Length: 500
Image (tube, rainbow, N blue to C red; front, top):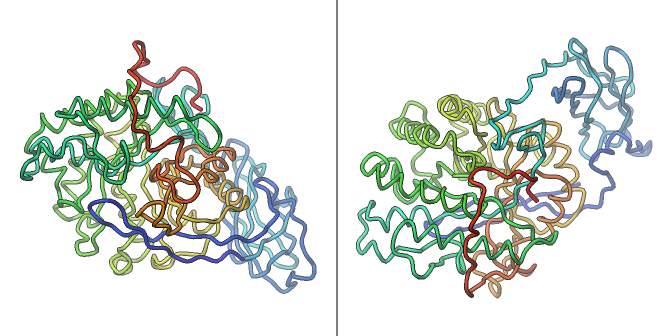
């Protein structure tokens, strides 16, 4: 059985700590769509076992996922739709089971049976198709991301500081000697505390910043080093300065929008999609952002709504990340408001408050995946649903920092993404091994993970950094040479051909 433990991780200024799953390797032989074909083991099967849970998710006009739990491992189990056995398979090492693409119709009823034990009879939910965005916008279709009906994949990197430093350098946060902050960022030319030379204003910052993507897309392109087409970038981080981005927007609106506008413009010139991170607060001292009656929360909704309104027709926005790692470091607070029920009430309420301002874009939330969160289940389909089965959350999300390179880890999670019928974004990943000879962060680029998740069809992944951490850096990072010019012709919104 896989076991888990936490590894501590610190990011670039300002510091924050996140606890990340490290899944240890166990040899299992289940493929992504072959769980129903696993043969039961009579030696291990407990004939007295009972089915304790069944969950049915409608995934298409004529299909559904059927998932559940039991008290027996490696026991034969079948799925019955309207009394007819349509699938057979086996429970796994923890008693869980799941079946994908089970044939159903509206009005069907489903149950699972294992020996003498049967689950409750569950009606099949009504199928609600995901909305389709305007031409050129990224949309969700079942567990895929699409543009104009064509399945696409996003691969990218995270940037925590460039936008924050741009506000500081523009003189909007009251720092002494603000000009000394021009060009500072977390990636280029070498992170985690880089500084791009020759930058003296907002336009030159983003122009030079996105030229690095032009370079890396010239030298990358193999399975271990995919070309980069998305940047997940913090535009707010209240750990630095509570309400800092909100107050900038309110006090200096022209300067604030100029920073955002030029970022979107040069990202578009470079062919890079954006996932703006609209909230983050790492301290455990103030939880008012998670209180929908607080002033901080009201400011957050006002800021996010204004950003969504302004860029609702900009197809260079891949999706909005409403908050980074709200599950990390706030265990006592979430326990005090009902655990996962309180968490989902906040997430669902937040989405309901801002989604009317984003009719053309998907929304997600950067889930750290804390295993110390009150009531969190062990690694299983229930763990994935625990954090991502939230009405209004268009794209499921998770962060992985690990050293385990076992195919079943990818296969099982691929199944769970498909079972929930939402595209998945692994918005942070890294090879999590303390090796100060490579870098000071304790995590770095992970070629195996990039290769295997994309081969499995994961819609979107973003490495936390490009740095080497014993597995090699991304492409030829850090690149210190001359950068290529922008192409003379470019497509202003979206891509006509599928993204690789």
